Amino acid sequence: MPRAVVVGCLAWLTGGSHAAEPAEFARGKLLFTTLQPACATCHTLQAAGAEGQVGPVLDELKPDAQRVLRALRNGIGIMPSYAEKLSPQDMQAVARFVSQATGGAP
Image 1 (cartoon, one colour):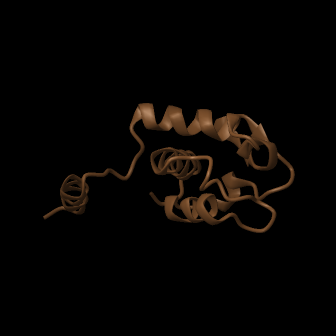
Image 2 (cartoon, rainbow, N blue to C red):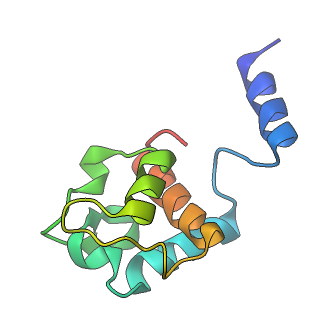
């Protein structure tokens, strides 16, 4: 069975997909630029028009969605946790937006 079919079946069975849906992608982008503090304040991410100078350049780091989720939930270094500010769905939207925009693993 071709890999794409297997991946598609697994995504269907688990109720998820690897790529962000257009609405989820747009939501993730909006949150990336408008959260308080906004991700865009510290991070550079071309897809969001962000040129932050404090945190890692996400276009170079190419984090996968799970890595972004961990950072959002727990914070990392000087980055605060967003666990009290974002719903799990919004965290997922930001994580998928970042990973898809940078070419990181889903």
